[in-house]
Image (cartoon, rainbow, N blue to C red; front, side):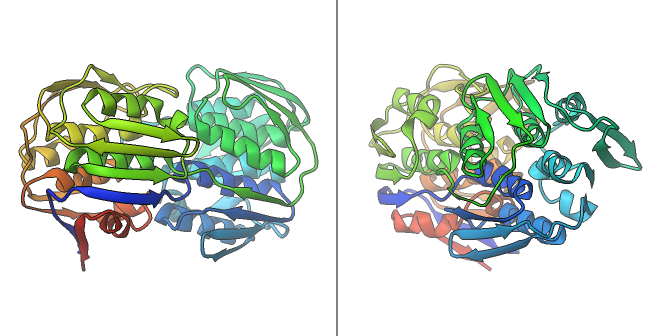
Length: 419
C-alpha cells in the first residue's frame, strides 16, 4: 500500500497556483446534465471524486472527455436516469445528481451516497426541497425513486431549516427545470454556490442571489452550451498555508480570493503568522512556533469552514499555547485526533469540543488517513514534525488534492510517495 514519507522541519518557500475547487466542480459537472448540448469546464482538477463523477456522466449517456485541466461534457444523448449503487457509494456529493436528473428527465433513481465517514449527513433537506417543487419520492430497498408528480414540477418558495450546501445546490438544479419562480430561503452562502450560479447563468439559466440567503430561480428556461472556469480551491489553499505555518517559511498561494478564507486567515494571524493578500493571492510568513488562539468554532460560511478544522488543528498542535475547537457541523470530524496523538499531540475531546495544548514540536510517526481533510491534516503535521512521518490510506487525500506531494516538493518540502 502506497504512503507519503515526509522528512519534517524543512521550511516552505515559493509560490503555487491552487487547482480548481473540488466542492465547486462536482455540482457544476452534475449541472451539465441540464444542458442538451456541450459544456466546457476549465480548471477542472484531476481528483478521484472528479473521475467518479465523469464515470457517472458517461454511464448516463453523456460524452465526458478530459484534455489537461479542461473537461468537455456533452449531455445531448442522455439516456439513463439510474445510477448504480457502487458509483453512488464512492462519494457523498453524488446525491447532487438527484436534482439535475429530475429537472432534465423528470425521473431519477439512485441509492444513498457514500464518501468519508463523518457521521450522519441526512439528505432529508434535499428530499423536502425536491418534494416542494413537485417531486414524488419513495424509498425501495435502499434506493430513492423520484419522479414528477402528475401536475409536473413547478416553482415555489423553499425554506431550508439550516444552510445546507448540498440541499441548496440540489434545489437550484431542480428549480431550473421547474416552470415558474422558485425562491430558496435560508440557503447556503458559500463561494462554491456562487460559482455554480455563474455556470448556470453562462448556460442561460435565470438564477440570482447566490452568496445571500435568498436565491431566485426562474425555471423552465431553455439552456444552451456553456463555457466556465472553476474557482480556485480555497480549502487546498488553506492546507498549503497551514503547512507553511507549521513548518515555517514564506509562501504565496495564487488563484484564490482572500475574502473566501477570511476566517482561516484571521486564525493564522492570531497564531503569529504574517499574512498579505491581493485580489487573487495570499502570502504567508511563519517564523516562530505558533501560539494558541481564541476558540475556533466551525460554522456555515462566512464562519470558520469545517473542512479546515483538522488542518488548522494539526498546525497548532505543534505550536505552543492552548486552543479550543468546537465542531458544529459534523458529529465525527475528530477521527484524525488519535493519529495526531501518535505524533505527540496533546488533544483532549469532550463531545463536540477538542482542547489542543501545543507541545512545541510534534515527532514523526506512522499514521493513517481517516478521511479527506484528516489525511491532509496529517501531512500538515508531518511538515512541521521532527523526524520522519509516514501517511498511509492516500485514497482519501486523492479525493480532494491534485498531486499534493508534487506541489509541496515545489515549495521545498521533503515528501515523496512510496509505492
